Length: 482
View 1 (tube, helix red, strand yellow):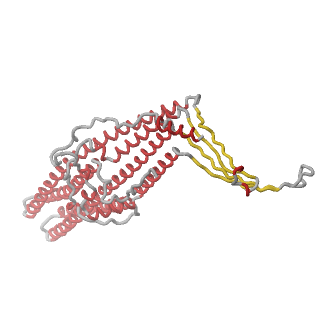
View 2: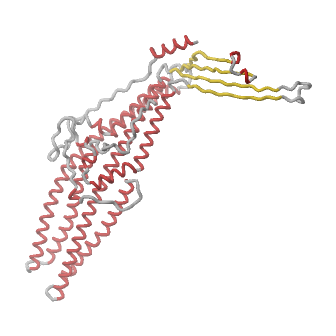
View 3: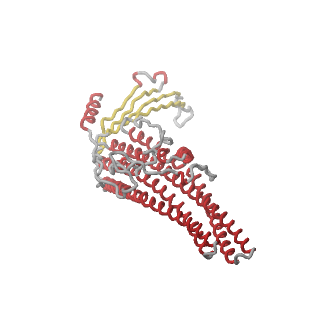
């Protein structure tokens, strides 16, 4: 028996094969450069990329960095993703365990005493205590690679879960940065509104004094009141938006709604593209969502081999061995031992109503679906990078022109007041200039925020955001073969 098993194992290790296709990364036509590069974007050298920077190298606001660290540790989506990684890793161990023999042990103790008044007349009483200890072995020989393909698929799903965890971190970091910039933009707009309201209230006092002294009609007073009411109406809406934005950030932090600490003002935020986009081919290796899609493709490819292996014979070895004795003191003696080893049993599927071949076709269709999803994710990545590059350039131009407009309107408003108090023009000119200045200042704040948000969008599109100084929130590397 030992000789037969040795020959069988040697044959298995030497000639055993895993049916089904081995994975090869599919080709995809990557462009030579990203569309959208231009003025304001650094020239593209070899390997270096803006997406390779760690998030604390991009976001220099210390308070924002503190918020990001809290979020990575406490955000529920990150914790859920980490638990999925743990579960997927254990699934690899479970699937790999089928490559090895399954050994179980058991025992039974039985005490018997028969009745002297039973159904059998004059039957003598019998008393005995019997023992039974055994171990059994069951082993499926993976000659055609079904278990190995299933293990390969489980490993790919584990790697996919890890890439998904990185994608969750990337999304969290960039979403939190966006929310923080939007909050600082709202703060800036509130400050502008309060300052404008104070100026208009002072102007209203002056117009009322001029009316009281008979220097002017009631019309400028009413016009100025309209300006004051308009500024006041903006403030409550901004306060509402600020509080709701704080609530949104609190949830990203994994906490209940509460006030949010602030750091640098919107104007002090220094977000610039200091490193070029990098090589287009490197994008496939950097973005977690693309790597996630590829690992799903690897798993689907292995599932095809697993399904095909079911068409081939199933080879198993089973055996039982132990001791059995009616007298416990003789349980472990030689005569009480027994064993029963069944030579390899080969079961070849003959007729399954088309179930097995349908399983192969279904696995191949799922592989094609995973392939198309992978290619679609690459296509979407290039679109996001191109859109972000265009956004960085164009929003910068919008901010520059908006800044020029605010300066011009500020001079126009000052001149309008001088002309009005000098009796050269009507108060309508002052009213129109003041209104345009207020609106342009709010637009300039939004334009500056959009410029910063475009940089964050580019950083995310290039695959940045999941890299951290100590990779907080990451699982400690462990050997999944254990």
